[in-house]
Amino acid sequence: MSELSVNHLLGIKYLNEQDIQLIFETADHFKEVINRPIKKVPSLRDITIANLFFENSTRTKLSFELAEKRLSADVINFSSAQSSVKKGETLIDTVNNILSMKVDMVVMRHPNPGAGVFLSKHIKASIVNAGDGAHEHPTQALLDSYSIREKLGDVSGKKVVIVGDILHSRVALSNIFALQLQGAEVMVCGPKTLIPKYIHELGVKVETNLTKALNWCDVANMLRVQNERMDISYFPSTREYSQQFGVTKDLLDSLDKEITIMHPGPINRGVEITSDVADSKQSIILDQVQNGVAIRMAVIYLLASKIKQ
Amino acid sequence: MSQKVLLNAKEVNIILHRLACQLIEKHNDFSNTVLIGLQPRGVFLANRIAKILEEDYNVKNIQLGQLDITFFRDDFRRGDKPLEANSTKINFLVEDKNIVFVDDVLYTGRSIRAALTAIQSFGRPNEIELLTLIDRRFSRHLPIQPDYKGRQVDVINNEKVKVNWKEQDLEDSVYLIEK
Figure 1 (spheres, rainbow over the protein chains, first blue to last red):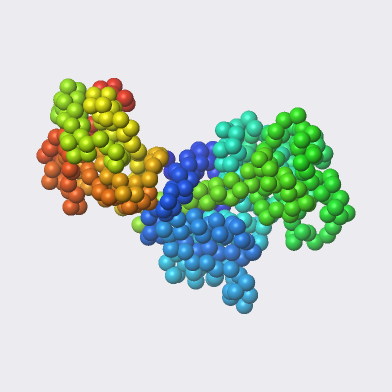
Figure 2: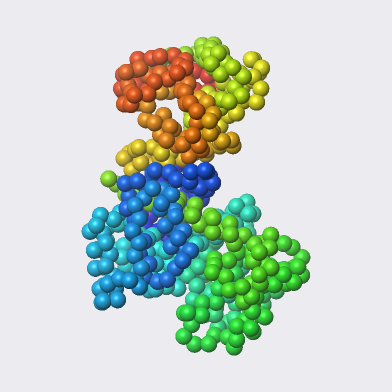
């Protein structure tokens, strides 16, 4: 087995195709591990990992924590709501204080794009970006591609449409990089106001008609409308949004092929997808969650193996 | 780099039959016994022994698994090369079973230590034994000894024992290679 080409996972942008394949092959092994009666391996028992969440998260934090514990790492958790960040401490000071407690790896979510890159230049620990503003969310993109590979056999040559709030989405950007690296075709679809102006320069197709987009694709990755990031109104009403960009069972049945439905969660049922679609056989939403643990175990294991004693 | 033949194909074949017979002596019809080949190279030996038991000694329904110990090793982050994982396939419960670990070479005993920990993830076996084709005597780091051994050899530290299997290496043979 070769090694990752990077010492941190800051974004998909910094990975190459071999890195992604290595992460997937390692995740295959960990997926078998987490389906054993005892779902734990002792590999990382001498590694300490700090989960620094400067922004709210439920499933990503749980998924990382579970992955770390299944690798037997020691875990400390931090969320900015209860911390000295509120008292005016800088990011570097906060992290250095935590690192002086002999932490080897930092998993960080931060509202500012580039926070992980900034930190990697100032501290020694390995850094895993668990989402930085509207920039990247690499482990989500990896688990999305891994789930496509599991369902359809291969990512290369597949057509994937990302539907919804592309403008505020770190999931969209990381997915575009990851899918293109593996040879998939990518389209984004959503209201014009929620599609970044120069996104076609990344080599993605742009479509504003959902039916056309679904007819084109093999896989539709439905994003949530991130109301909490919207400072102005980007569309007239949620009702109008769901009429134009929500996927319903009737719409899926009207297509001449069966497509796969994904969602990074949390779902707003009845907005971007209806309940019967989310719970249908075509949806791999819960597989994505299970794969998330295996992918994060693989990323942490591979990065930890580069930390020399 | 010089090399010396320790066992040729005929000798390997005789030894495999003897090991199979020794297993039958102890485990009879194998109704509560499972063979677990240790990844990567113990798997070839386990497959071969299972085949001999089934075809030549008419033992039916042998339960055969393969166990990868990579994530249980004690040298993670200690070597220059990254550890290479392989697949684990154990499609049965090992609770109360008699397990026979199968590996090609027993050297320091550290892999077996890791395997003893790894197998606990699949339940609490009744008993665990060890079958190995080559036992490198006087080189153990841990108090681990084989229950069934093909050939015991004395090898100094700068020598390596290489077991070849015709499935992968075109011939059955065991070489002593001087590094």
